[in-house]
Length: 81
Image 1 (tube, rainbow, N blue to C red):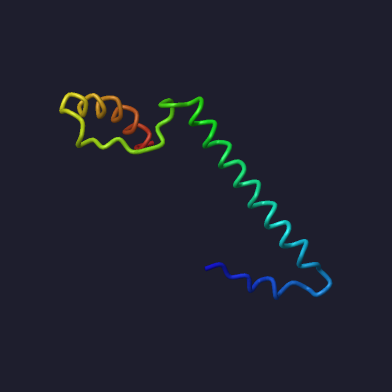
Image 2 (cartoon, rainbow, N blue to C red):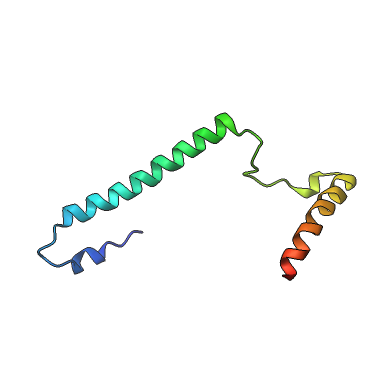
């Protein structure tokens, strides 16, 4: 649940309406950006960037070996650096 008790601590000479409008503005910008990026990705980047999980248990043994063969040479030097 949202807790707006911090609004009570605002000095009385500040306008609470301006504060609430600024919060609404920020959340609106975030929501617009999120919906735009989701729509753009669905139209233009189908399959280019993985935005889900590929379960390894659905792969055959040869694909698993290829995945780890490509992953480990990159991961190990970066993790030890």
